Amino acid sequence: MKRYTHHELHSEIRSISGGYSYVKEEILSYRGRDLLCIIGEGHVDNSCCGVGGCIFIDIPGYLLSWKNGKDESGHDVSEVELIVDPEEKREIATILEKSYPLAQIRF
Image 1 (tube, helix red, strand yellow):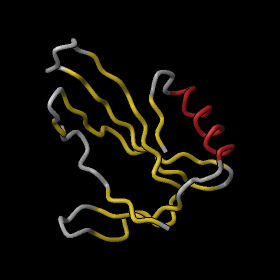
Image 2 (cartoon, rainbow, N blue to C red):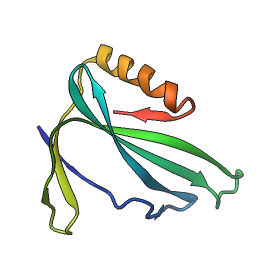
Image 3 (tube, rainbow, N blue to C red):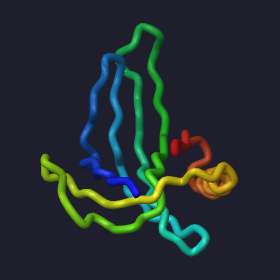
């Protein structure tokens, strides 16, 4: 079990060459369990190499509890079970690629 701290949606996080933001939390049903998926958008807009962007999906794991607490900063916290099986990761990525064909998927 691991604690997952939810990010504020549509709040940009800047870096030296661009930024990213989380835009949606989605719960995917997979093999009878709920899987937490966080969809985000990243962009490079301040780089010497040019500009660009991407969509990414962070998958913290299987939901064990949904927003059942807060961290010291007041952000919601859920409990998840990490996905360790390589075959499950491949199957989940295949499912998500149908809805988000160009997304980077990160476990």
